[in-house]
Image (cartoon, rainbow, N blue to C red; front, top):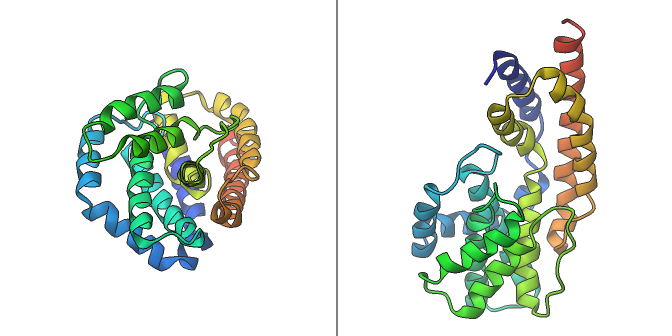
Length: 252
């Protein structure tokens, strides 16, 4: 990464560090812990993490670091949503497995055109070697097919399928908050290495897209907490943009 971007990234991370963790995590500590523990201990998730490690890179900010966060947050969301729906703990645990599988697999075809559709097809092939029944594989693949921003999700007749799909989408869009300015943006810049003038020219459009995400969260829990992630991202992004203009553009 060019030296100027290293300096800008340092400023961005200093700004992010001043913000508290989003309320989602402090409001649901036991569910967060349960999802983290499952992610670390479940044999199928351990195997899938190993399988995915060689399939993803960070070129577009959607490598293993990204999918692991999405998987854990999707797991937290599905625990909350499943219990709100009155499901048994056995059902909660099974839903947790499916949500974390979807989180780990959702960007497996990130660089391909129609990556969500391609990712669903690839995920289906991978999951046939796992201890899942066909309906469960369908739920995971449906969630992957419906996780893209600004795309109309398909109508899902199954309540369970809708729940897993909504939780994957929301966990993925949580990353558009502070994570975007801590990691994702710089992974993309490191790969593309655009001239600073180009970066600055595109910045307002990126912020406009970020703002559009705010009202797209799908689950009850996502709709409650997701906007805060985005509001934090917008505030961080605006402060960073002013710093770039002041310290790097106007000084040039």
